[in-house]
Image 1 (cartoon, helix red, strand yellow):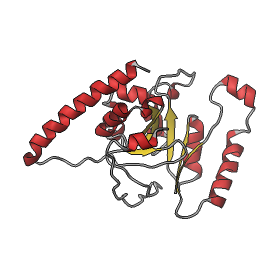
Image 2 (cartoon, helix red, strand yellow):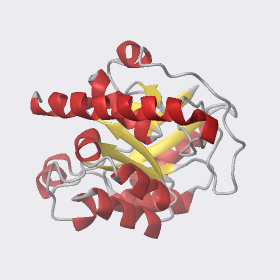
Image 3 (cartoon, rainbow, N blue to C red):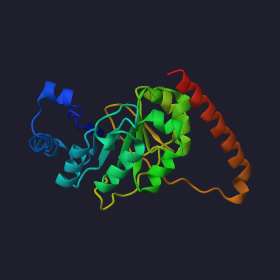
Image 4 (cartoon, rainbow, N blue to C red):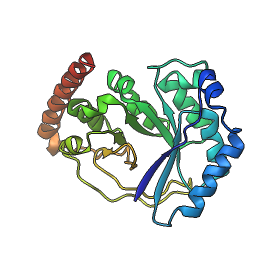
Amino acid sequence: LGFNLELKYPVTEADDAELNPAERNKWLDAVLDVVFSCAKPDFRIIFSSFDPDLCAMCRMKQPRYPVFFLTDGGEVQYTDARMNSVMGAIDFALSARLHGIVSDAKPIVCNIDLVQTVHDAGLMLFTFGGLNNDEAAVELQQTAGVDAIITDAVYRVKRTGMTPRKAPPASDTGLAPVAFGHPANSIGDSSSAAGSSTRPAHAAADEPRHSESRSHELQAVHDAKAALRSC
């Protein structure tokens, strides 16, 4: 059983004034107390949050479960620069030794090369948002190697051809073994899975199939851009 536990904490002054939350330290300790007292050994859990300071604290307080930084990727602007772009999210995730980022799908689909940028930094990339209910946009991300897709349309996205594969063993970073999909997972808003950024290299004998795959990818790009225009 897998869980994506989003740590929801106010990230704007208006929200903070309205909700008047407990101090981050006490708030997070209360959450972790519940998780560690209730989680079974076979539970696969990741933590995620839009609050960068909470992400950093969660990473320091517990090494067992992966921590991911949620970002709108520039779709919404905040006073904290770490929250305003995918590149800002990457820089912060590296500085806080997080396991990856979870970005709104729009900036990723608009600049699909960001997938490789995230992977080159040694991070995993998940995406969320309304665009992930569109099959063409999801297929484009799968082709590029996005590690997991968070979607409301799980059944429709699953029809794009993902097949399960075995997860690698846990690493010493605390990244627990999780369920994998290929080349990306589709997961509901209340569940979680992580995939690998490793794609098999094609041998010379596979070149015709590679060309066909490239044509398919270009068509996916076209379809995804059309989906973006309709958003």
